[in-house]
Figure 1 (tube, rainbow, N blue to C red):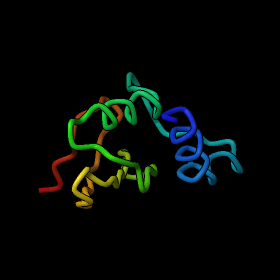
Figure 2 (cartoon, rainbow, N blue to C red):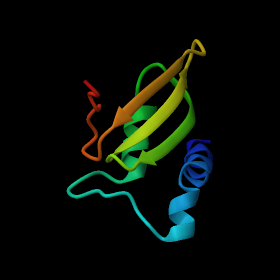
Figure 3 (cartoon, rainbow, N blue to C red):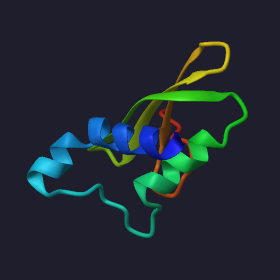
Figure 4 (cartoon, rainbow, N blue to C red):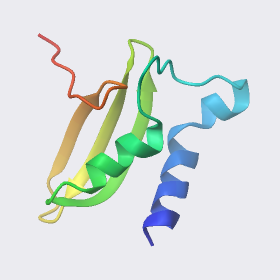
Length: 85
């Protein structure tokens, strides 16, 4: 089931990269699948809603928790949350 969710999530999240042949800038960073795996390991994770690359250099991730709450988080290629302050 997780493989299906991962494949479908990546197909939805990265259509522009697939069409243009571009990849997120990941100098010394993790692969998108590794970032997603980190999110899936969170104890409250239920399902992925969206994962996309922002041109400012981070992944925008939206997921749902077991109690159906919506979580929006931005993660840099190193796997750390982005502080927008």
